[in-house]
Amino acid sequence: MAKREREKSESAIKTIFSNRHFFAVASIYAGFSLIFSSWIIYIPFLAEKLSITEGQIGGSLFFAALGSLIMVPVSNKLIDYLGVGRQTFIGFILYGLSLYGIFYAPNHTMLSFFLFVYGMISSFFVIALNSLIAAVEKESGKYIMIGSHGFWSIGGIVGALIGGYLAGRFKMPLVHTTVLLILLFTFVFIFKNEYYHIKGEVKTKSNPLSIKSVKPLMVIALIGMIMMISEGAIADWSGLYLQKIVLIEPKYLGFGYAFFSLGMTIGRFSGDKLSHKFGSWKLLSYAFAISLIGFLLILTKISIIVFSGFFVVGLGFSVIVPEVYRLASNIDGVRATDGISIIAATSNIGVLIGPALLGFIAELTNLFYSFIVLSFAVMLALFVSILKIKK
Image (tube, rainbow, N blue to C red):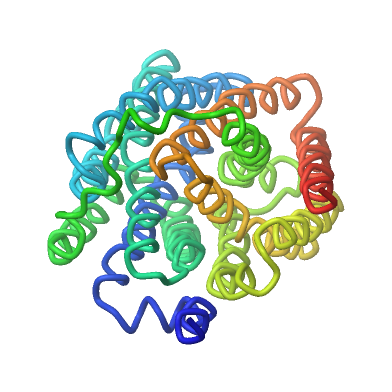
C-alpha cells in the first residue's frame, strides 16, 4: 500500500519517461496540441484572407463547438465498438487531416462548415484520448492524467513559438500543415502498438446513472464548462488581443499563447503530485485563484506584464481540465467513458457559448471587455470550488 502511494506521488516526468507505454500515450497530447496550434495561430491570417470581423470569427467557432457537442453521444457509443486505443489512433489521423478544409475555405460560410466538421472529429478524438488515459491510470495505479496533459503544453509552446513565427513571416498554412502532419503521423505509427489494443471499460445495463452519482458529476461539469470558455478564449483570441489591444508586431502574436503554454507545462508536470498532496477540490480552488491573478495582469495592456499574465493564467489553468476529467472518471456508479463524455458535452456548451459571446462583445466594444468577462467567469468557478471544499 505504501509503495502504491509513493508511486502515485512520483513526478509525472519521471513516471512517463521511465516507461515506453506511458510515453506513447502521453505524447499523443503533444501531437494534438501541435495540430491545434497550427490552425489557431492562423486565425488573424484567416480573418484577413476572408475579410471577416471578430464577430464572424466567433460565429464560425460556434459551429466548431456545435459539431463537437453533436458528436459526443456518437463518440461514446463508438468507443464500445472500436475501443479507446483504436479510436484514439483513428481520431488523431482524422483530426490532423481536418485542418485542410479550414485553410482551403474560400469564404466565411465554408469556414463555418469546415469548423463544424473539425469539431465533430475533435469530439471523436478527445473523448477517446481522455478515456484512454483514465484506463491506463486505473490499470497501472499511477497518476499520469495531468502529466499527460503537460505534453499538450509542450506542443503548444513549440507550435506557438516556432509555428507562430513561421506563420507571421511566411503565411503558408498549407505547407506548414503538410510538413507537420508527415512528421506527426510517422511518430504515432511508431508507437501505435503500445495502446491500440486497449478497450477501456465495457458498458453494462446493470449500473444506470443514479441521482447520487449525477449530482457531483453536474458540479464537475459546471467547472468544466466555465473552464472551456476561458481556456478556449486564450487559444482563440490571444493573438487578436495582442494585435489589436496591446499592439504587438505580427511576428510576435504567437507569444501570448506560447507563454500561456509554458505556464501550463510547468504546472502540469507537477500537477499529479500536487493532486495527491492536496486533493482534487483544494487544488482546483488554488488553480482558479492563480488564474484570476493572471487575467488581471493581462488587463493592464502593458506588453511585458500581459505576457507574464498569460504565463500566470497558464500556471493556474494547467491542472484544471485534467483534474476535472480525473474526477469525472472516478465517480462511484459512473463508467469512466460516460463521465468523460458528460464533461465533454457540458464543456462544449461552454465552447459553444464562449466564442460567440466574446466575439459579440468584441464587436460592440473591443476584446479588452471580452477578457473582463473571462475574469468574472474564472471568479465564478473559484466560488463553486470553494463551496465544494466547505461541504
